[in-house]
Length: 120
Image 1 (spheres, rainbow, N blue to C red):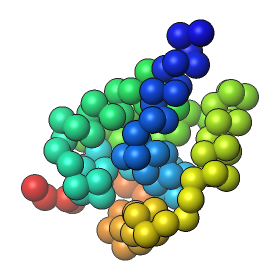
Image 2 (image 1 turned 90 degrees about the horizontal axis):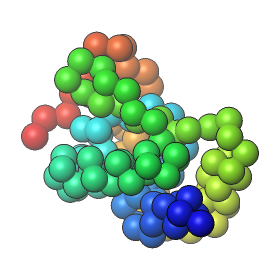
Image 3 (image 1 turned 30 degrees about the vertical axis):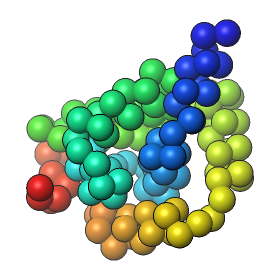
């Protein structure tokens, strides 16, 4: 029962849903891009990502001083849940703006030691 509560908590915030949608658009995002896209502090992004990681929806890896996030795929429950989110998340102005942000401001690929280039 705790697993379903953890998943429900992870999906109960608009910013966490935005992150999941963004990671479906671009499978590798730096924490700095998420800070810029969401318009929140790095600490807030860290808290959101911690909840998504705890739920088993995202993975993190360190690249120098940056943290990059990817979706956890390959597990039936995760893949099913992410497909459900993609299908039921309404296409609204915020999601559209996030997609535009990703397309215009996030490089297609970043090297292992490459930073995101977002300045604060």
